[in-house]
Image (cartoon, rainbow, N blue to C red; front, side, top):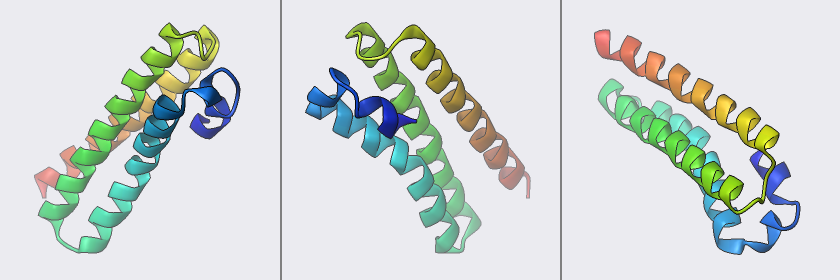
Length: 100
């Protein structure tokens, strides 16, 4: 979704925001994968926390895109809800791993 909305003008012309939101959205999955591959629970928890923070970063950037009228309110709501759900799921994973 992030790549889709950032490919459309005028968003696609804001190279800094486009690059930043793409990096942040990709960072979520990348940090989960990296933390998992490290093999230790503590390191995995650390990388999950970074993933959750990257989700917050994407949501912040979505607000900036909405304020600049790069995306519609509907696009904002859809993407923001996705990243809220993702953060909630990552947090639940963190909570479950912390108990073990």
